Length: 239
Ligand SMILES: [Cu+2]
Picture 1 (tube, protein in one colour):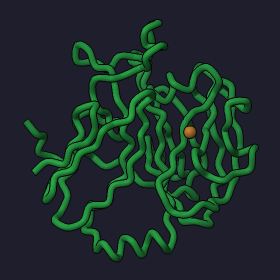
Picture 2: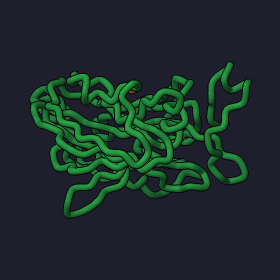
Picture 3: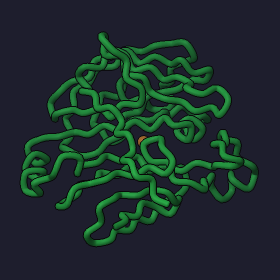
Picture 4: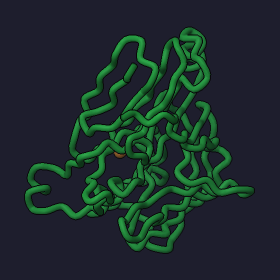
């Protein structure tokens, strides 16, 4: 049975408006984690960050986890001090100011933890942040497609191990370490069974494979009206 409502879209936040980016545990029992963007006037959990090419990020990164972490801006051309690589971690309770200019062309980028020994656990726990960079090429593509409202989606496709109705925390067995930590349910932008109702016309999807050890298979049907993501094999547009 398909859910009848569109999934709630993650809030969109301008990269340049972020004052603090806090990495925190949202659910201590299942170990789920999230990013919290502090904009000064309000705080936004798990935002999709938007940046125009040439804009700048100047914010304090705060680690509220009980483990070291980093915020690695994957794919961006950055000064090494802002890159969030594994050898430059932020300890529990510590903070670090990071500044950079977005020099890359338009596209979907992401930010995620990269601390040695904790990367897989923290990414699986939900620390997969999307960054959409736009420029004139991107504007031209949207205009050429004449996209309807809501027909452009940025999707972080991950997977979760769900058992007994609950998401299991990351706890790989020896077998998982050999064969990969695989889930049994698709988790898209942090939601199980997510679906989006789209309008007739072109739909533009920007997708991130945030699975730890799997390349999702994606399928498409002509004239689809809904983008449905339920199985770990991928996303299936449905009529
Ligand atoms: Cu990366």
